[in-house]
Image 1: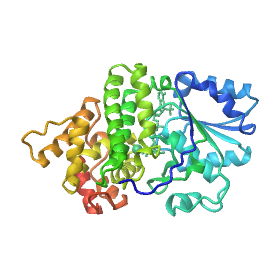
Image 2: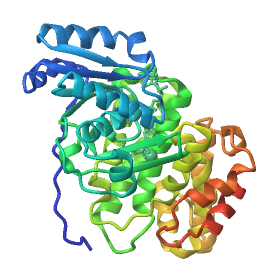
Image 3: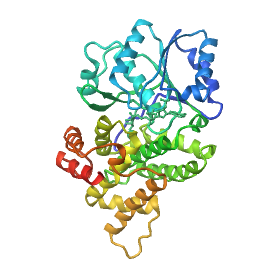
Image 4: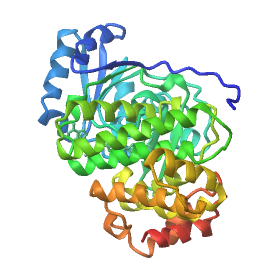
Length: 387
Ligand code: NZQ
Ligand code: ZN
């Protein structure tokens, strides 16, 4: 059943090889002062930085730059960006990069004119934003998070070792997003597979909960099948446009609210991973991969029919003469084999975690879940399995 919903996603998407041609027209909608936000040096290496600066200059914009946005963006960088917005009367934040740069842009956007401490008010107390929101536009270079078309902003506050996400309303979504799959050709294999597993994880966390007959579950299965197929191809040939374009759009669909419509959801794997990230600074998708299989083996009995459906519909598991348990576990094993095939490490040790971190990560992760309510003790049990 589809429960009542209102659907609104205001992000305008320009997709394809020529999508950059739309930048000038978009820039015309905003004032002169642009904050250009990007990561370390990937956009310079691929020539995108020069192209963006040329376009901004041609449109008569004043450019203020903030570079070096870290993967797992830091709150100190948010505050630095907020200061630059105020000092330079910024009209548009242009985020060029992956999820980290876009998340940081949204965080700067809501924090620049916040009254009081934005971390406490917006990421801890989840207060409504009651101040001016600076518009964000984006050019995507790394796929996975869907930050280009949602209100998510995941920030790490290094002072308190907390990495936490906030999903803001449509007023904070990027106003426009330029998606050229060719920009992702240079993403290193490790980052690419991290992004792929991030997408799988978003889809699974929206899928594994709620058992009514819901159109969204069928949409999720289709997107999962597409990304599994295309990521196998892109792993062999990073410049396979067909594969890269499918991955890029699967990633956007994975968390642009379409694949979560009218569903109860279980974000426990993400909750645990965010704290893992706060302690280890590991790539987000790799952390999710390590946690997912032990987590799903821990909870599958509480949602067994859905795990059977996952095995059959997504992984084509042959069910002849098998029990539900066997089928469900075979589905999870297929997911694990897929991760191995992509070369994803599957232990916490390989991501730099040490045994003494496990209780701290468990203690600071939120209790909750979907089919099964996960207490701090349950979370610790899963983390021990992952170690
Ligand atoms: O810093 P540079 O030099 O740009 O290098 C980046 C970075 O090291 C590199 N990269 C990006 N585009 C490239 C490239 N390298 C070569 N060629 C290119 N074209 O990739 C590295 C990782 O980038 P990052 O933005 O950190 O990756 P991702 O997109 O996976 O973002 C991860 C962050 O997003 C959060 C995660 O927790 C994490 O902090 N998430 C945001 C969500 C949201 N907004 O809804 C939801 C997600 O579940 C997630 O939590
Ligand atoms: Zn994610």
